[in-house]
Every structure is written in structure tokens, then in C-alpha cells.
Length: 182
Picture 1 (cartoon, rainbow, N blue to C red):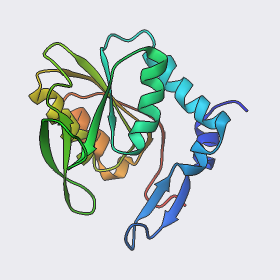
Picture 2 (cartoon, one colour):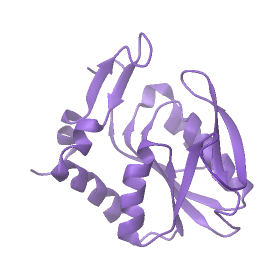
Picture 3 (cartoon, rainbow, N blue to C red):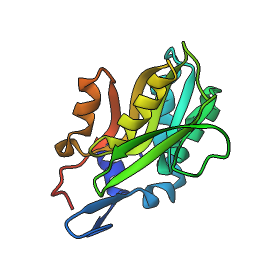
């Protein structure tokens, strides 16, 4: 199997009307259940970043943890977790943000990053960009830099990638879906 955008798209399941009516949820579970596909996705990110100049991998709760941890391991980079509110045990910095479904808070341990650190942020999907924008704000509050925001899927019609690019954060995704793609 040769990796291409089409083959990855076939392993992303559309779930209509989840978590609310009118939403098509992009479920990466089938992709994760294919060892070959998961390896191809991880290898694509690893090849992109193997010679890049950055210091940390930032993984967003929860599906960003999957790819982020694999890439951090393979590139021998520290893994920084961005968690939903109330999940981290030590001192945290918190950032409120808007999701497609309401307001939430993202947290990071206050000692995770330092001035001069550079982070690649990983999530499974870029939709409105709320979670990645909150993570970027936390990184910048810690006086670190964002090398790039990376995800498996982009939903460009929702504008998240553009919002990130508008504030100087490059984005990279492996595939994109139009909102009406089934």
C-alpha cells in the first residue's frame, strides 16, 4: 500500500450528526486500527520533522496524544501535554477557548516550557482552530515559540488553519475534507 491522501481518507470514518445534529464527525479510529496506516501517518510526520529545528512536541488532548507521542518518541523530543481542564496534577496555566460546541479551557503544566523552546503542536484535526489557538497562546505565555501546528485532517471551510496562519503559525495536515464530504 502506497501512502497517499486518498488511502488515508478511506480510513477516516464520517459519523453524521455527532456530537450534535448537522455535524459530520471525522473519526480516526479505523485509521488507528490499521497498523500499516498508523505507521504511514506517523512516518509522514517523522519525515517532515526529522531535520527540523525545534525542541518539543506538544500534544493536544486527547487524539493529538496518539500521533504526538509516537513522533516525540521517534524524534527523541520531550512531549508536552495540553489537557482539558482539571486533568493535570501540578501547577498549570489555563487558557479559555471557543469550540464548535461551546466554551472550554486548555491547561499545561506551568513548568513545561521555557523561553527559547520551540514546539510542534499535534492534534488529530483542525476545524475552527480553537484548541490549537489556545495551545499557541499558552506556548507564547511561556515565552516559547511555535514551529508549526500539525494534524492528520484539515476542515478548511471552518477556517482554523487560516486563523493559525494569520497569527504567524504555519500549519501542516495530511488530508482535508470539505464539510459536505461523506
